[in-house]
Length: 283
Image (cartoon, rainbow, N blue to C red; front, side, top):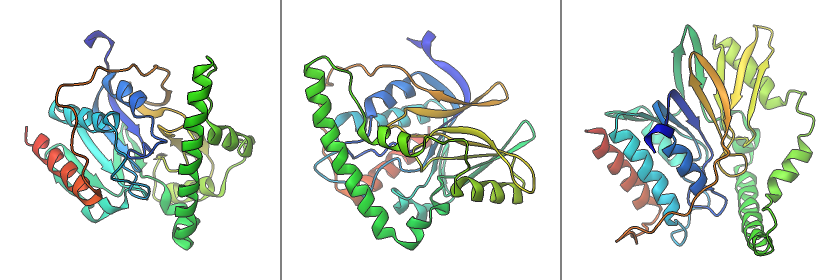
């Protein structure tokens, strides 16, 4: 219902990983339908080219793309900030077609506060020094996701609440959240050096809202989390940034007539998405 739609200035989401079993596209679709932002920022790893398979791109994933295009058609400005899993788009940096643009990083001033938004992988040493290791980890993560999915199907049969294995393991590893990670330390220094008061990333899949200290002053750091484990977004409204934990349960949607769409290969899909955004941007 339209009365349930929240109007806000900006929504930042990242790490959707469409095209993989880990993606929780149905929950994301419900969130997108619940908001009417002036700007929607897709902060990297939206489509997972590292684990993309022509044999797996289900309808809920396609519906997420359709919903984003619908938002674009209704006047929402869409900013696609590239990540490491959708790095193929980085060659389109600073491409703008109407209300749709692709960038490697995004800067905006809000209420005299300079905000820097980027995916975050540029500060990940493994990505730069041993990319093969990062891809191996992504493959292992994908395998664990499939095992997790099968386990939850069994749990659902017995009426037991689903679990997310990798979230539980990560929470144990990162239980001391008061200590700044090297990622956060580097982030604070760079943001302060470039005179940003707020910095927003994704990449780590860990939602964070804290103030980082540096020798050049404090920096507000938000990590918008992910739509694999945490279902979170960074939202700006009423002159304030907040981290939203989306609690809505995904509902089963009726199938549409003629909804069995052809699933293209990787290059065809990227080209098709760009064409769709380009057409929508003209209106």
